[in-house]
Amino acid sequence: MVTFETKVYERDWQIILRDDFLASMVARCDYPFSRRVLFVNNVNDVAAVSRQARALVSSQVIDAFYVVDEYASAALSFFDLTRDQLGADYYYSIQELVGIYVCETPYLLHFSGDAGMANGATGQWISSALDLFAADPSVVVANPVWNGAVDEVRRESIWENHDFCKGFGFSDQCYLIPTSTFRRPIYGYTHPESARYPAHAGELFEKRVDAYMRSHQKYRATAKGVSYVHPTIVFPQ
Picture 1 (cartoon, rainbow, N blue to C red):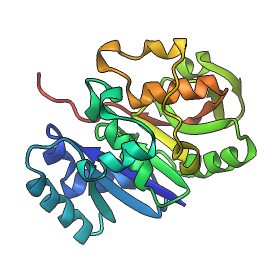
Picture 2: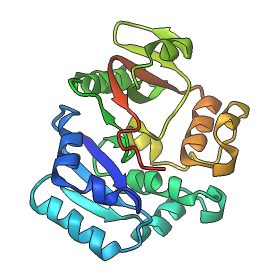
Picture 3: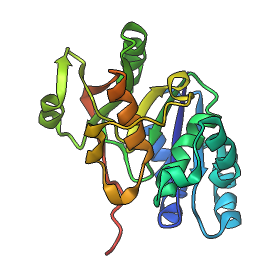
Picture 4: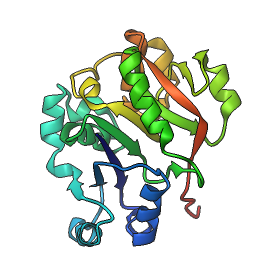
């Protein structure tokens, strides 16, 4: 039912593609994923990174890996986008679009390479989120609390029950989505509230999703009982 995905790029692939790092990243989700996939995005030596990724497939840490550049043109065409439309930081958006384009399961859980579930978290939030998607069509995204900031989540919410806070907003650090909702040409919207995303980064994937959600009164549900951590990798300055 659910695919787990994450990605590597030039600066982090040698850290993430260690058996223990990626295996731990999946294990901390505490959920029986149908597929676990990795995306190789914007690296200098594709062959070297692919060898490392292939080893992780052999050791059954992941089920498959994709080189983003090999699918980018098809994904952009499918979503009726061009590379120029994504702006200067194209590489901050293209993996997410490719991930949705190639996803083979009804649901997709995405983590950026430098984000992950906090230790001790339970995967029950994923099952609860799938139930919420079915019960409330206005909810199209779910995620844990970011960095334990429950008070911030509540301030941004319009509704709350025992398990979730519901409100606007979207982050590409972590998201659980129904694939069919996002596997449509929904990425051409703009909204005044979405201007809060960094202007220097161009028309980012997360900005486009936020604009679509606000334009159509679609919401995210944040699971109150669990948290993800970002960043999990701190690079030297």
